[in-house]
Image (cartoon, rainbow, N blue to C red):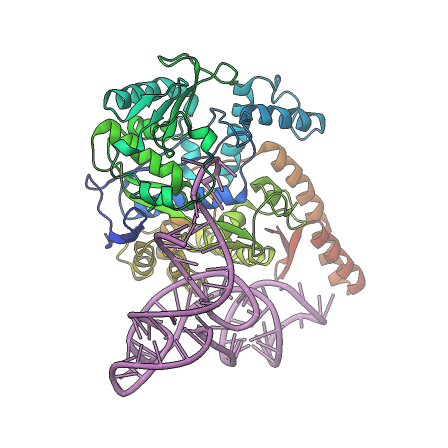
Amino acid sequence: MNNIQFYNSLTNRLEPFHSIEPNVVRMYSCGPTVYDLAHIGNFRSFLFGDLLRRYLEMEGYHVDHVMNITDVGHMTDGEEDKMNLAAERMKANKKSGRVPEGAVTNPDDPYQIAQYYTNAFLDDARKLGYKIAFEYPERVPRATEHIAGMQEMIGKLIANDHAYVAEDGVVYFSVESFPNYGQLSGNTLEKLQSGAGGRVSVENQSQKRHPSDFMLWKPDNHHIMKWDSPWGTGYPGWHIECSVMAKKLLGRDTIDIHTGGEDLKFPHHECEIAQSCGATGKDRFANYWLHASFLFVEGEKMSKSQGNFFTARDVFEGRVTQSNVHPAVLRFELIKAHYRTNLNFTRKGLGDSATTVRRLMEMRQDLEERSAGEAAQVDLSHPVLKEFSQALADDLNIAGALAVVIPWATSRHSNPHEALGIWKVLNSVLSVAPINEGYEFLDSETVSEESESLMQAQQWCAELDEARREKNFSLADELRTRIKDAGFEVRTTKEGTTIQKTLA
RNA sequence: GGCGAUGUGGCCGAAUGGCUAGGCAGCGGAUUGCAAAUCCGUCUAUGGCGGUUCGAUUCCGCCCGUCGCCUCCA
């Protein structure tokens, strides 16, 4: 096992990684809200968690990974129910045919909306090789299934004097009761007060003991999703679900790793720490906090108003590049940069990734053929895997690791059994060729559509070979153009013309 | 204003107190009916100003730029 180190947001420095229990890592990742389709920025941070998990598994850890699905329907700034907004969107999408008939029979049923977007998320996530998506529902809990646990933790926090019921009936966490508040984000109470961020409006704070106190439970009969509780019928605060589900599903008060996007550091993760530690009395909720930086699109921050806001489906279905993109290409594009840098998603980069992914796929195929599928057993002491894993051991330095993989992949391998063995280990982390070894995920509609165009293109290949034999080069060129336009790459080999689907 | 990150060649993106990744694109060649793919070869860099040092892109200081968070946010 390598000496692993990670940049811990809790201490703002690189720290040697040691799990609490030898050879086991308990890890929690903040997951998606299911009021809309997940976008490529969301997936950047999710795939960072996936890469981390797969890397730790390569190092020999058993990784217990949990990710939540937030389906409670919190409120927006303008005090609108997100589930309500999702319902309005759903109605519009049904009208325009973007949501398949029968997928959501009643848009006013929030559980149907949530399930629809949950399925869509899992679908995209599986295509992208996000391992935990194959573990739904066991390791992918939904917040609405853990309301009782949240109420239990809230009760405990009140009993511990970490929470109180304000005059308006809302249950708040008292940040002053938790001296470590601010440890993760650096936003200590003094700084929050003197910082003058200007976003805490005084009117909304009147019922709180401290402006930074955050909501645990809000009695509200008008909220679409609501549950009975000792503090009235209403809904839970945003942060409490993660504290509860992490503890419940990972079975420990203190876990090893917690991941999420950098924007979750404050307030979300700061509040999770306060709640969890307040309820359990432990010093630590998670020993290592790892945060992924943002994804940019063509150098700009992704936003709806800029028109550069893309879902994974937009990319797959060619709405970004004008041609369909293989999920492995998007996966590669989203994991190829270090997680703490702002990854710049570009169309050119996607093309670069496609080239790399195609090479890796072809190499795999070549090795499978030459070794008759028999891979030799190799471990991390093999030079290639050693360098690869050592790069990743250094705070998940994926670019350094790829600098080992790519030259190796393009060199000649006299021992295909050994090379295939290495390949399998590399791909257990990268998961691009094929995208998800051990799991199959094929959309039958896509498959039949593709096989039809494949048969047509193969017919043209035969005609092209015939034309070349007859030295009818103008016809051959025309056929080649036609095949390319149909979305295939054309190769001339000794055995004749071969094609393969363009990856991006 | 507070906290944090970051600035490497046309682009993406590592590493390092001296031997200076990798990829894409480009250029030259082999190959090809022409291409594509492949193979061989090849060019371009460390934001600015000081300091430490025999020597700094790497360490230190200052300045400039970029980005994130500071109660919707991956």
